[in-house]
Image 1 (cartoon, rainbow, N blue to C red):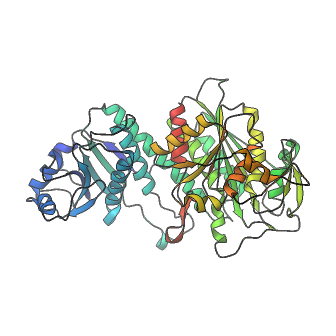
Image 2: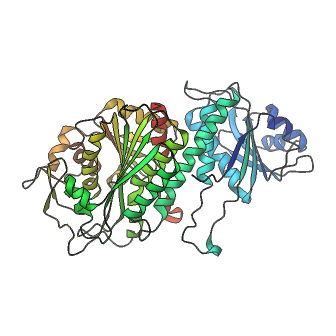
Image 3: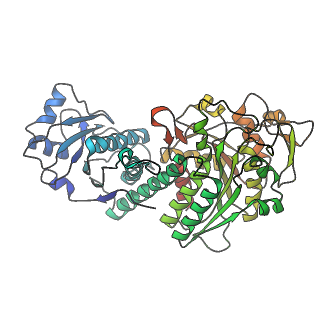
Length: 504
């Protein structure tokens, strides 16, 4: 993975804040009129500018609040930004750390700064798993992710430039420098994984095809010693009985692919953790055609696959001491003379038959066979990731991913990882009462049913996951941004990475 930023941890930075040159200097200020040692140093060098702001009520230093003060000859930095840390003895929560990290990133990204200095006195947290290390991981992820630019298909005059190149960070901490540096690097690698997922998501559908995802996965495997990749074409999938997956790509000229990535970081023979991604590189809805207004956004229907590929690169870069399998089920869903029709019945790799009532409910069809395929690895747990339903947006909006699982321990692990990584999910039920909505008169199961669309979609997938602990992440609302900021978000790479880091 290409590093876009140079992030360093510098113990002596706070002693030389006034003299160190940089485009942007970011310092932490505590709430109240008594300044901490860092902000007092800058206040003295700027003729009391910080105290004046506080006295006038223009800057209260509440958690995550940001402000700007003019520099002078007494400070070598070109610009100075103040970040509120709240009261000095107030415990900081996970949400507080997110606000502070976001404010720092926004400040460093402003005014086209190319270099930044960050100095913070952080020491008080309200949970045992929060510390300076966890904050640095968040900050590393935030800075690297924010540095992302998309320019793959833009002319030179339209290409956006990542101005921020180098950031030096100093935190007054009782933790070892080695531990702090490791956490900063982990965060940065997760940010790089997010950017891999963004790049794949943002590419147009005529470029990012199932074959393109396959070649990208092979390229990733060539970069990392412990990562391998095998790609299955349509003939091989037909032999394995994957008619359900193959039915989705029937109307497309693009060949469907099943991609299997294996990371061998643990002992040989140790059962792996598995992540499975939906890779619909473009989704017209098939014969059940989607409305045209926002159909361009259906290139994002492979964000589940993108998150798997990005996460596999994260774990390979971090050399986690566990075994991991990443599966991508990829197809292009198009109308055509050979396309699957509503009412068609197909057989899955598991032997179950499916009545396809709506060809726009195709993600669950490719995942059904992928979730059966993954059984051969005897996985400890399986997590599938998919932009599966618009209903999850109605339920949870664009900030939170939907989580459903047949195993409460796995669900809790994922929810906890999401909180740690600032990539939150919320659990929805998949009780038996919803299963009847998928009854069919003509097959073992229908591919749609009932009003609770997100839940019944997970109920459908659960029919193929009875042999292992499984969880489903519906990221239809979180994997990409809408409107002016339209593009891949890189989620849920942080959640998946944190989950696997915790398991390691």
